[in-house]
Amino acid sequence: WEYDPCILTMQRLAKSPIVAKGSKVDDSTEIENNPFPTRNRTAMVDFAIGAFAKCGTTTLMMTTARIPGVFMGSNDTSQEVHDLRLNRYSAFKERYKDHMKTHDSRGRRLLNGFKSPEVLQSQSYLTNIEKYFPNIDLVVSVRHPVLHFQSAYNYKFRSVDQSIHPNPLELIGDCDHDCIDNCTVSVERKNVCTGKGYFHRALSRLYLTPLNTEDEKDLLDHHSRSIHPGWKGRLFLMELRQLSDRNTTRKNFWERTYENFLGVETGVYNSTLQANPTGRNNFIEICDDKHAPIREVLVEVGTRASRWIQEYLLKSDRVVVANKDHFLESIELWKYDPCVQSSE
Image (tube, rainbow, N blue to C red; front, top):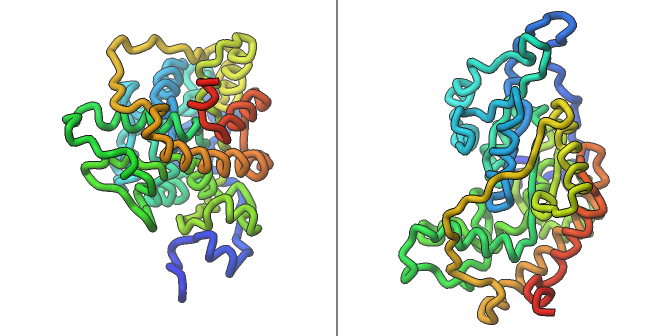
């Protein structure tokens, strides 16, 4: 009686640790039985790009949309899809009504996807994915929490009079869609806060780790957000530095691994996107001394996130990471203040 029976949390798991894991739903149609098979309901979409804004998701979406046979929910390849967060399943289904084939006439695989940065931060999003598309694969990019905060602040307040920009120090705390405590969200704050850097807390909702030890729960701050064991897909996890990697050999391997994850032909994906010539607003320079308290908070967040990813998340056989050594090197940097490093 102490818990909402409709919402599974870490606290409920502790009381009832045995949760039906289920099995991967096989609701697809074999091409051998039908040369032009049609998708069933749960196989309407194959993958989603998202989880965290300002982590390269737009670049991922636009470059993925260039792959032959990939449809990202709209003919506008820069459009995000938020229907499932808003519980508009009919509108979501309408997007794909003309894209229900799994292969084209030449036998080439056709893929349906969408991009939304809020997939892991919205309970309604996760609940609807679990309900309608339990096998969907997720593509998630993360980055250093300090640099993430700076990027989010400068982007979100680009259209707001600078004289009424909030003091960044006022944005220490949570502001997720289902924020529980210490919420800073308001119209004026544009849903920007240090809590957005808790990437590990959001990723833990996928139930890819045990969530049954005090050490792991400590790293996750014993959060009370919903857990979704009904999702049975795979996770392609990357760090933003991998997307701009100048090591061509390593970058090429990353691209081939991504192709393999999606199930497309080798050599059809190129992650390079021409830079937008428009200038960027730098309302805050996170390395200024006055922002040191924010950096201190976010380095602590990054330390916890880095450790949880390494010691828990990467042990799951459903997590795919390309160039693992480079990925680990990148998230190891989260334990340090990037401004101190750059000054040294």
